[in-house]
Image (tube, rainbow, N blue to C red):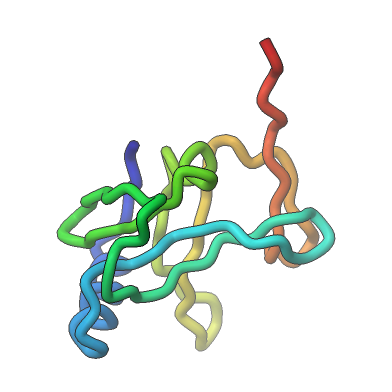
Length: 112
């Protein structure tokens, strides 16, 4: 599994992990918005039993097996829009997004 993260985003996450005494960053999907899903991340102190560890640019990520196909290939960047800095998630499997970009739709996996 691969997660790509910019140096700026990696620095942000490392500062957050160190600030709260965490061990890693959980990256996951949650149902949200008009297109169905949004990416989220939060600092965690320990790995859950259904998660795998992914290391990228010095950041330890925790990914649940149920979200793995949506996280493999994820690109995380820190972007500036106007006066705001925000984390932006992108993934090659995204086929649609709402107008504001807050929620996304993925290509359906074909049944064999």
